[in-house]
Image (cartoon, rainbow, N blue to C red):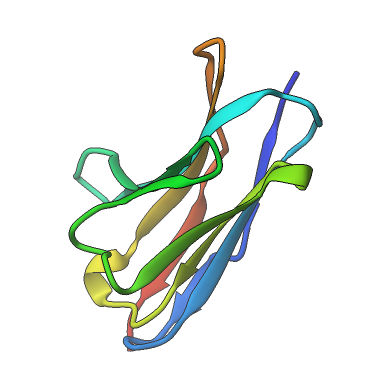
Length: 116
């Protein structure tokens, strides 16, 4: 059973930074896409950023210029550096991987709260 382990969430003041990490519990998973999603209370889950085949990167318009996604391919780890955080970034952040065969897996989520 593959598990995705997330870390790095927490409480931060507006304008602050956090770095999320997500690692797979097994290696050699043939991962195509690694991504971060988020879900705020009462809202649908939305894509924050993804990185495909280690090089093609997409960001939600709301985080462009503030968030950076990166991947350590050798370790099957994905990071999300979040700068200039805003209260509207408050959500549970989920890591996701999609393997080349099409299987998508999810982490359990980590809470990010931006508040003064």
